[in-house]
Image (tube, rainbow, N blue to C red):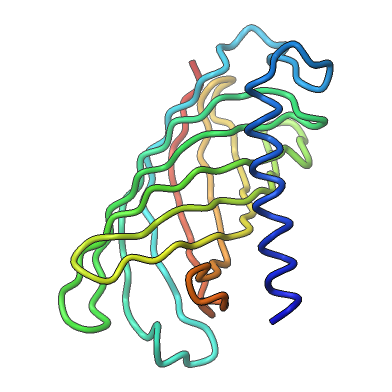
Length: 181
């Protein structure tokens, strides 16, 4: 439990650091993107969830869609910060609709030609016709650039229930299209 709290604290600190640093453009730590593209991104994606280790709490089929708006900047590494709004359906206890609002920070780790690998964190609230809960998740993103300003991406998250302080013992996977302007 101590390690989970430490891990969650680290990810939340990273998200807050990136948010605060990008809001203070007068510091040397933050710079705008250096290419000719605009710093804003829009993404639309679909997502699903898979329970791990036969977790009885999260045994379900979950599907959803997500809309994301982000801002590209440089915080030590090139980064994107932003907000995601999602809608989902679950059949774990009957028909359950849920919504989520999350803030995120993703750092570019590797870029090789048209391929890119990002790592980051998100924190947010899930709500709807169920009891709402706060979640945080480390995430890994793979991108394939179709054009200079358009990419297909796949993202995998391992969410933690911040309300209970436990892992949700599941993976959330997302596939989508992102446009930069």
